Length: 300
Image (cartoon, rainbow, N blue to C red):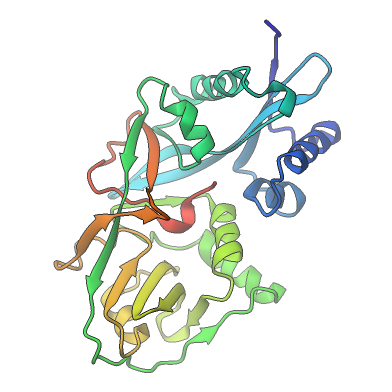
């Protein structure tokens, strides 16, 4: 069997950077987190791990995002596995399992949790010991459609403006936790990428609340995706300010916590499939019942 070398954190190696870009190009991986990361926004917490053959070719690559995971009031170390790329000539040769196993072995005695939302990665993690497949749930609450917002000033952000982009970046970097139940930090680049890709026209600044809010309002459903603020926001007060008349339901892109006693909790379905996370909880003590990781914290 062919032998491979494990390399990682090779951002300063021109040869391997070109190798990774070529691999992404062959895989059609444009507009992905990895493509954005390598070209524009390399993050110190993002570490690429790759298998290299005797010719120096990258045959498989997985991104590892090192971060903090907050469970309740306790901070834990975690890693998220992001985007599996495999050279065409090495597909179906089990290099995926070899690489993932090396990564897990490297971190299992260092971090408290290892997890992935990536379907390609999860296909292999389901055969790994100690990884649980967990179905997620979405949290929402009914809203009185006759209730009108209080009408404070809300400024729509223009993220093509470098000053406004930088302002949002620093707010995310230094924000309080979006959820008192489960939240992450140290993954600013993932959150920014998801905002730019999916919500670039849905970012608002609420000066009176000293908060940046990502929300959508479609078909009488107000979805508050995330909140970023250096000070703790009163979520009910913020909703009273933002939710327009005619809204019948408010959905949350995170678990809002015990502030609401009338939450509806339903399976989180994307397309026609239940959304799943593969989690190895080493010592974080995550409550796996009705779990929901913040929407913008997911690398895929």
